[in-house]
Image 1 (spheres, one colour):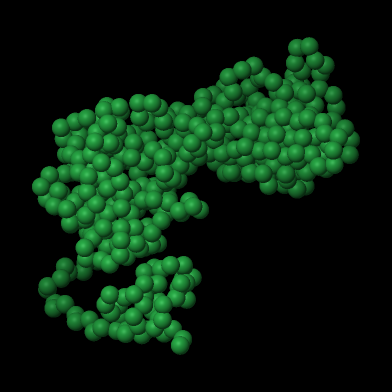
Image 2 (image 1 turned 120 degrees about the horizontal axis):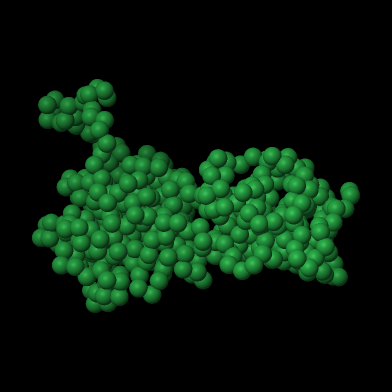
Length: 458
């Protein structure tokens, strides 16, 4: 029997979009999500009659010009990089969702935030549903987060957590995590979409009624998206994502949604044996420390509103086989393949018979096209066995015609390059890749090597 969208008596309902059907289905016929169709405990309420509220019983509507436009008061978390991402600090009544892969450091960061808030005299309740109180205490001892104003509760029941809120009366509530807390008012086990929606709704309602900032931790799926119903991201005010490579200690916090500030800020952190440290100026993390060698070039990348110098390294080895290797780390393999094709066809640099290895320093990942020119220069210098002159950086997007296109936030990139001592920034002023390589001929010689030869003709 065909499903009906508006059937109020349908016994099955999608927890994501509210689509109803008379028979169970593994996939929702409306939003195409798998595993979201569950048995409805009650009618959806769509067909019910809604009685209007008597005049005067509700808050009166006013003209938009009558509302106060003063800035919402904020208070610092004590962690400057986290404040940067939040837009200046915590807003009373804000609901914040922090997501990230397991083991990336979400709990460590929030314990640091809780400790700084407690040190400032604000009472904090840290409700952990994944770890025992002893485990959190051991981490707090290691990171120096012990304070009498930091209260800890190891609970998985929503009603019990709300009871602790009434008893402690905190100024900041942290729940770790929303997928492991369950409510008796909803069917299913903890982590079920209906449970996640019920728990999140209750916590957000608590935040709005009491003006209490609430930070909840969210799990992620295999593809990196936030687990649970999509409505979870719509309900909260701020969605932050904590990311980083487990092979390095560098961590980034990005704001994917922020009702109180910009969404293009990035916070940098460094995971250490004693916790997590802020990195207000991460410039030195992405640059090589040794002497200049052939096949290196610095580019100025932009993470959020922050300009960062990143060193791109390339290594080429002659290969007599029919299929040379292309190995990349920290850059997009498709972009590198395009850059190599432009290098050979438009600039005459032979790379089709070379094994090419391209990597970034410090584990940072370059995803913007502005790194194309630096990759091309690094590979070209590796093939020609030449180094760049001191104080040279490159920023630009390459086209298939070999042209260098301007990039966004060029003034900010140039300012950061000058601050770090890069006197010559190779960019779209050179117009073409071949022109940029021509501009770099002068002074590119290294002691013990001959000057850079002319590039081969087409």
